[in-house]
Length: 437
Image (tube, rainbow, N blue to C red; front, top):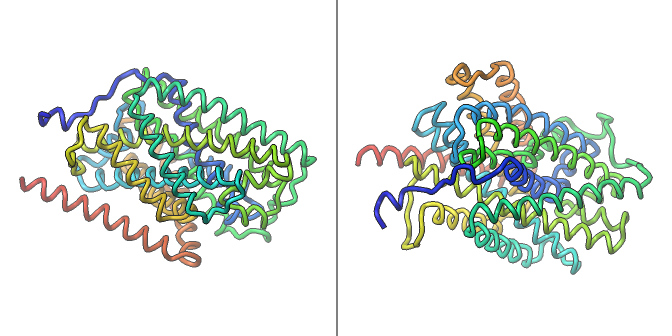
């Protein structure tokens, strides 16, 4: 291989339609949001958990403002990396924050992979602590790798079909579940004395993971048809679809289970909610759609995240080694992404995975908004008031999540600090060493 061939990624402009981009975005969001996070959010928010998804949508909406503006101005297959470079230049902040986004999405992939394993095993009445959970998760990641090797056209077709089936099935679960319950909501309340504000805000931080899949659209911006018009549209449409689905499902779960039952089954809350609503048939039905959701979500995520890492490599912001592998940069980054997700799937549980992903993502998100506000808002026509609100909302929910985890699970705090130090220090050392050569 020649050097240029090794260092160049092949981005096919116009290979993703608006419908394909929306399918990819909703595929990632719904894959993680409903099945992996409903129980985790309820654990923190208690009776306010449906409202936590609504509040998270509001925060995500303000966050999306910067991404839409940036995508309209700078459509690129690098997405976040390109946006950070425009705001901060090609330096430590750009490389480190882009890597935080990359790792948060790899963490999200492991979250989805473990969710796949957990739900699938409900058919056999096997608990979430079984060794088969990570085994199935690793198997799904391998399958996602093989699908991604087949290319954009196959991914787009598969994402569209699975996204349609998934959304239709989940909406059916929600509507029928509410109907059977008689529209009773005993486990849902907005009374302040039943839920602490800190817990609610921490739940909102986790809920952001249910919407951050829209960034997979920006990461594939250079491959979307008419990106200056369609990237923003795809983001708005994807978030709108997801907030409707999430709220309906949250009410359906709350109508069929008490908060204590939801928390006890937080890794597979929808499957547990299907039992009283639908019986054994409902369990199989829900598990089936959980499998569809997690498979499609993981395929779409691996597609976008590996391309983001390829762009970082092309920008000379991260080191790259071929290790004797054939193929181009995209193939190599696809391998690295899947292997990293496999490691997290094996060694971390769902709760810690979700918390780590939320922390890394929100830190990166604040950096995006701050860079736009301080450096390029006039260039892209961004409203400073909206940017300040987005930064403030991110800071509040991040602070709440850190406060709760400091009281309940210091491992998350230690892992987050270690991860941040590793990324920023590693990026600084890499760029310093590169400047000397």
